[in-house]
Length: 246
Image 1: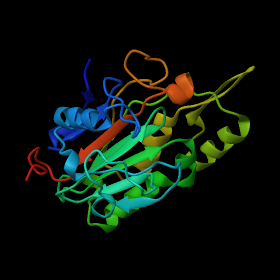
Image 2 (image 1 turned 135 degrees about the vertical axis):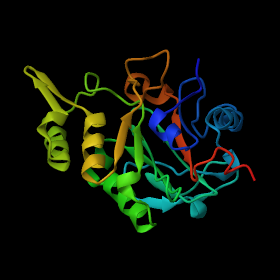
Image 3 (image 1 turned 90 degrees about the horizontal axis):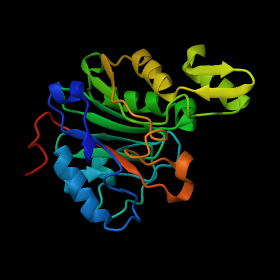
Image 4 (image 1 turned 90 degrees about the vertical axis):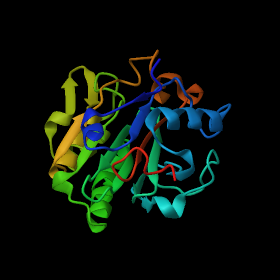
């Protein structure tokens, strides 16, 4: 099985990156977490020693990679749902059904990794990451964003209240599917795309895959609850694969 999936659009502009599959379990308390991180890093072209991660809490906090970097293989203590990195560092987020987003500006080399569940989508984590990139000098119109494997609309049943909150946040009724008497279903991937496009990102690409449907390829918290592993989506700042190996 492939350890790491890539975005052709991010690869074309030179960013080393990857969306892990269930070939490696990247829960911080998983058996051989450090070894799995090294395997993923090799597959994605990312040096784990320069990879900043945080504990995802379904919020909107955005942090800088250089201030959250911990020793390779050691779980971080910082809580955040988006990490921005400048050349010399990499950013990564962990997911099991939520939307992982990797972004990069090939002009400055700035990148961001975003964890966007429905709560983060509603609260504005994507907009927060875009604002931090822009403040750092990134040209969003030339930037590329890749939306990784996540729970698909057919699998993500929600209540009416959540459906209304998502619709309001995204400002697109098409993000919710309703077929009475079935409960509403949310298309988080589409919601993320709409917010990225509205935020000014020049290229948005989907890396396909449903975490809940495709049991042989992906972990899923909604399917497996506490037994679920975690994926890692990570991207190295700078636009050469060797930028983090010094």
